[in-house]
Image 1 (spheres, rainbow, N blue to C red):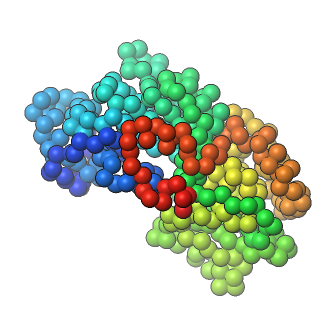
Image 2: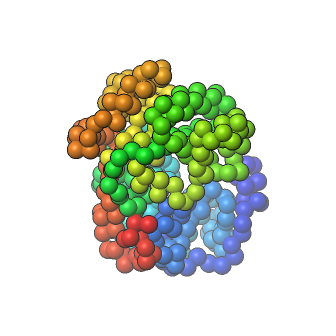
Amino acid sequence: MFSKFVKAVKSKWIFSKPSKKLMLIYDLPDLFERFIEKNQYEVLDIRYQSINFYILIKTISKTGLKNLTTNYKKNYLIAVSPKLVITSIDNDLSFFKLKKLYKKAKFACIQISLRNTIFLEQCRSYNKIKGNIKLFSDFFYVFGKNDKLALSKYIDSKYILNGSVINNLYKTSLNNKIKKIIFIAQATFGPERLDQEIKIFEKIIKLSSELNLPLFYLLKTKNDHFITKKIKDYFKERILKKDFFLIERDKDTYSHLRSNALFFTNSSTLGFEAISRKKKVIFLPLNNFPGKNYFKKYPQNGPFWTNDHSYSNIKTMTNKILKINQRKWTTIVKKNISEIINFKPRNPELIKLLRKYNIKFRNNHLLQI
């Protein structure tokens, strides 16, 4: 309670009543800002970055401090009166309880990242408690078949195998001759994890030199993040010598997936988004493929992944993949990746839902930036 009070004090206070809108975004709007006009929705902030004073006072006057967070959400929903409530926070149990608070809207959840058993365990524990509200969403746009099979045991919903909504927004490109190597970084915290990733990357530096291909390190973190500074400090001499080039992380990150590149990563979601486009990607997981605690077990070695991080093994796999023609590569990817992640250009099923509620899009949303 005290931590919530501190967050509330530091929040941005909004004194005007929320506008009535056809759509309400539950929590972060970042994904939807890419393709939906901003005047089409209201945002219900659940991270205490902003608090609506009008809704807070109304809630306290009606129900006091009892179940304040839940009643605040309920009154916010009533004030906005949306026909559609949507979120990209797919691992938050609270969203799947909202239908009980407000029955006048359809609820849609969008998977934003590769998930594992951690959220499933939360769902399982919650469902074991007698009397708890049944977890529900009218629609759940998931990456692939594996997610549907795992989540449907705990969350009642209509599941759509949509792949990554962000990835689907961007143009595809012909997969021509490989002209460079892009290493997709994944470490965002913890010196041990970063050190493991750097050891692998140093082998990719050697490989790129032997293949005579320029190498790019695509940062996971933004320029002001302490991990970015540590990477720059660690590789300062190599950067100056141009052994590789840093790519800053920004909103145009997905444009790099159109490159005629060979991609390496540990188990980054961006790597899976790249391979869903039939790009050549080699996964070097630090734990298991496709990621730690994933809800389906895969062998330690596959056609484009390996737990053996020896230089000789990485080199052998790379040379083998570089020789595979695009038609054969497409067949290999379809056989091994479609149950993990799909690729659905322009998100036809999601766009259909949004159009049903007359949501207006940004002018460039169909151009796939």
